[in-house]
Length: 201
Image 1 (cartoon, helix red, strand yellow):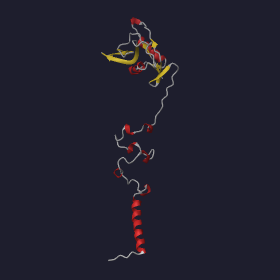
Image 2 (spheres, helix red, strand yellow; image 1 turned 180 degrees about the vertical axis):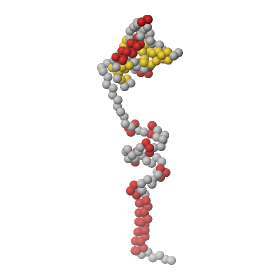
Image 3 (cartoon, one colour; image 1 turned 90 degrees about the vertical axis):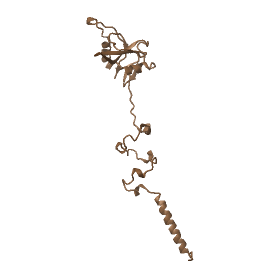
Image 4 (spheres, helix red, strand yellow; image 1 turned 90 degrees about the horizontal axis):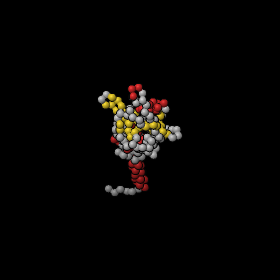
């Protein structure tokens, strides 16, 4: 059978090619308006193909993420709000633990009361209380002694001890702990005359 090529045959063939080609082109250009809501599922999206710019800001909530699927390494620092905490301290004071303390320490004095009991530790704690503060914890004293550029330990002698607000519990007795500038501890600082910082605020 011999096919006769006529102008109408050429036009019909071109129309067929355009129709087929146009359909395949359109198939690769699906827009969101052509997709019914809630029809695209996770399995329809290629792994790693979505990026932050593909997700509307504020559209994802905690309930949209499976537990333990996002790690800290996958969250950019700038994506988390940061609250800047500013502690205003008086002249000669340094910020610490959300409060302030003098760069230099106070000196305690031996005080004899009835029956010869020495209450120098309690006097130091009371003095801090009068200053609307408290004695530092052992952890805070560790920070103070490890930062000599910000704080002066005791009277500048690392061999001197400072009181802490931490108590040692032994044999049913609670005794205040003191620490020196090298990190050595005294587990009963009641009857000693030591230096101290007060943390206010």
